[in-house]
Image (tube, rainbow, N blue to C red; front, side):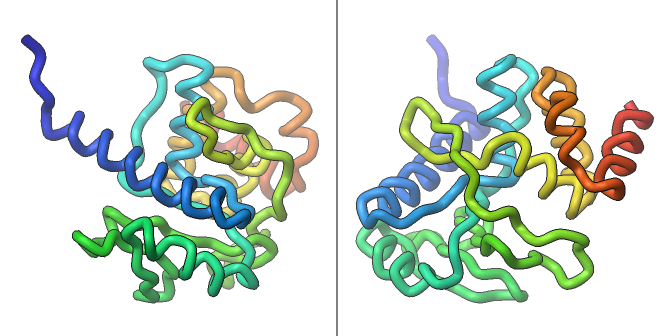
Length: 188
């Protein structure tokens, strides 16, 4: 008999948080894209399931002008808006921690002042079997190479390792991001 481990329970909870969020925004007709590690996980999983690494939270790109409507839309789904440490997030009303939150970033804005590029505007999304809208790989690559933290470089390696970063995607990158991609590839 198989039993659920703490990890399995966490994975299920993370997907439930994402589903509640995406259901709330879809029902309200509010555009969004799942980004960050969760989007990388889902893209990599679709290509090669055993190569996918799970993340510990959910990030979403939204329009800043939609924030009041988002706050209203997610409340019946058990989320409360919180601004903490410069981060806009939707926390689970029953267990309000950053780990159970949806972290929001805004299209057309830099996440941090020092970043070389803003969050890309909405491109046609990829879609999960559950109906969640994912940022396309090209947008994720730009965001990951822009922030360029260790976990972002690992996400780049994961996407590249299963062939998601194509020559076309690489060719659309500005010079600085192409150099960063080459640096990640050289460190494999």
